[in-house]
Image 1: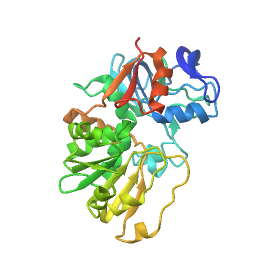
Image 2: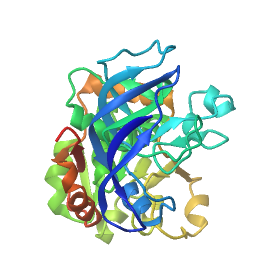
Image 3: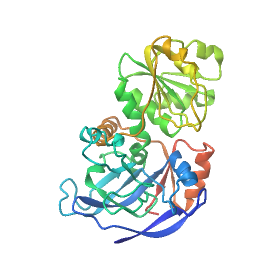
Length: 343
C-alpha cells in the first residue's frame, strides 16, 4: 500500500482538512501519478455537501507525472507527464465501453472520487492529494506546449463542452450560443470559436462583453433584455447551456432554428419545467451531455494542443482550498481555480 496525503471533508459540508490515507500499489496495468495540479469544480462543492461517503477527498481534473508503472503497462513510462479526468475505470465490455464512450458505461463508470475501485473494492479518493493510482486506459499524455495548470480543467470542463459541440456539428456555417461564462462556458466559447462556428455569448451582465469577445464570441446578447432576446428568434443551430442555477429554458428554445438543439451541460438543482410547445413548434431538440469517454477525451486534448486552448485559471495553494471552494460558490473566479499540489 502507498501512503498518501490529501485534503478531505470529514462530514457533509465540512471544511477540507489534511488527511493521510492509503492507495493500493499499481497492478499490472496500472500507473501511479504524482499530482502536480488539480482543478476545482462546482461538482466538488456538491459532493462535499452531499457526497455520502466520508472522509471525502474531492478533485477530478489532474495533471502530474508518472512515478510507477505495472508490469503490463505499455503506453507510459516513469517520468511521463500525464492528465487524468473524472473517470478512472469502467466495465470494459458493454457497448458503450467498447465504443470508447466509457462515461456511459452500462454498469456506471468508476468515478475519480465517490466511487468504488473495481480492483480492490475500496472507495475512490480524488485528486486533492499527493498521488493517484489507476488503470493506464484512463490516463492521457499531457499535450506539449500547453500550460499544465491550464490543461487540468480540460479534463472535466473541457471535455464536457467539447463533446456536445462535436456531436451536434459546431463548425463553419453553424451558429452556436453559449449560456453562462464560468468554468464551463469560457471553455465552450474557446472551443466553439476554434471549431469555426459563429459564436454568441448570452450573459446577464454586459460588463462581461469584452471578456466574451476576447474568448472568441462574435456577438454578445444580454439575456435579461426582452427585446434583445426576441431578436434572436430562430437564429441558432445549437445552444450550449452551462448554467448550474435554475433558470427559464423557453427563451433559448425560441432562439433555436428549426431542428435546432438546446443542450444542457450545467446541472441546476430541482426539476426542469417547460411548455411542450416550446419543443414541438420548429421540431426543437432538448438534450444533455456530460463528460466523455477515452476516445473523445484524447481527441479533445489533441484539438486543444493544435489550437493552443487551455482554461483561464487562478492558481491556489492546497491550504487555500477552502477559500477556493467558498469563492467558487459565490462565482468569484475567472474562470477556474487550480490547486498547485507541488506547494
